[in-house]
Amino acid sequence: MPDALSAHAQSAAVRWAALKKAGALGAIVLQHPGRIEPPWERSTLARLQPAMSLADPVLDDTAGQQVSIAFNPASAERLFAGSGHTFAEMVALADTRKPLPGFPLPTAVRAKVAVDKTTITSDNVAGTLVGSDAALRDEYVVLSAHLDHLGVGGAAGGDRIYNGAMDNASGIASLIETAATLARAPEKPKRSILFVAVTAEEKGLLGSRYFATHPPVPPRAVVANLNMDMFLPLFPMTSVMVFGLDESDLGTSVRAVAASMGLGVQGDPEPLRNRFIRSDQYSFVRQGVPALALKVGYVPDSPDANTHAAWTKERYHAPSDDLQQPVDRGSAVVFNDLLVRLTTVVANQPQRPRWNGTSFFKRFAAP
Image (tube, rainbow, N blue to C red):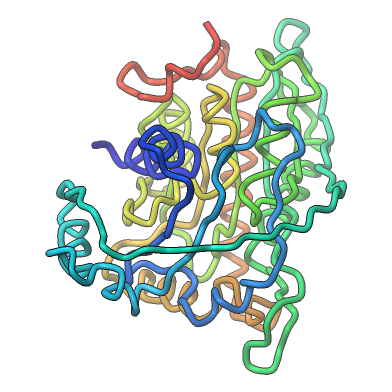
C-alpha cells in the first residue's frame, strides 16, 4: 500500500468507520512501542486536558464511539493473555507491514464514562492577498499553519508552560513572513493567496477541518494548500521534505523550485510515522484539494537525522520546545525563500493543480 494511502487508512475517521461497521462501541489504542511520539511518560502529562470536537455533527469523525482508551504498550501483554497471541507478535508483524490477524481477546472491559460538555469558540485567522490576474484572481492558493499548542500542562522538569516554539510558532512566523514578502513584491501573484492561521490542530485538526469544509470563498475556488507545521530548522537546509510529494502535480512544482535553489527533494523517509495525516494539509486532502506539507529534509541514518530524532524525543510536546533551543536561522531563511517561490509558482501557473492519475485521493475532488 502506498505510504500516503497507508496513513489515510489509519486516520481516526477511516479507522472508526471500519470498527463501527464491525459493531465496536469503543477502542483501546496501543501505539507501536518504537514509534510513540511523544514518549509515553510525557504524553500522560496531558491526560487531564479537555478534549475538543466540532459542534457540527456532520464533522464528527468518531460519532457513536462511547469510549476511547490509550493504553501503555509496556503493559499491553496483559490484554493478550490467554488469546494464543502476544503483543510482541503484533509488533513484529507490523514492523514488516504484514497483515495482522483478527482474534478474540478473553479480556473484558467495563467502563463508566461521564462527560461534562462546554461550548466554546476558537477562531481561525485568515487574510487575503488579491491576485493580479483578472481571469485567475477568483481562484485561491491556501497557505496554512496552526496557531495553537498545548498551553499549560503537567510539569516536566519543573516547567508547566508548553511553549510550542517549533510546534508551531515557527510555521506561523513563516506564514507571516511569506505574506509580507508577497505583499511587498512589485508583481503580485496571479491567483489570490489565502493566509490561514488555523486553530485546534493539536485537538485533531479541528480548525483546518472546519475551514476546508466551510471556506470563506466558494469551495471550488480553493485550488491548492501548502502547509507549514514544525518544519524544524535544526541544521543547514540542503533538501526539502514533502508529505504528499507524489500525489499531485504540486510535486512537480516543488521539484522545479528546489532545483532552482540547488536543493534536493525527498518524500517522507519515515512513512510509518503517518505524518501525512497528522497536520492540517490532510483536512484539505479530504476535501479533494491537492495539498503538501513542507519540512527541512534530512538523510536517514545521518547526523541530521539523529538531531531530528533527538529533538522529537526530548522537545516534541515538551516545555523545552522554547526559544532557548538551538535554531539554525540560515536554514529557516532558505525554507522561507522556498515557500515564497513555490507559492508564486503555484499561483501563477495557467492550470489549477491536479491530482496524479494514480493517486487514491483524486476521488475526493469535485468533478
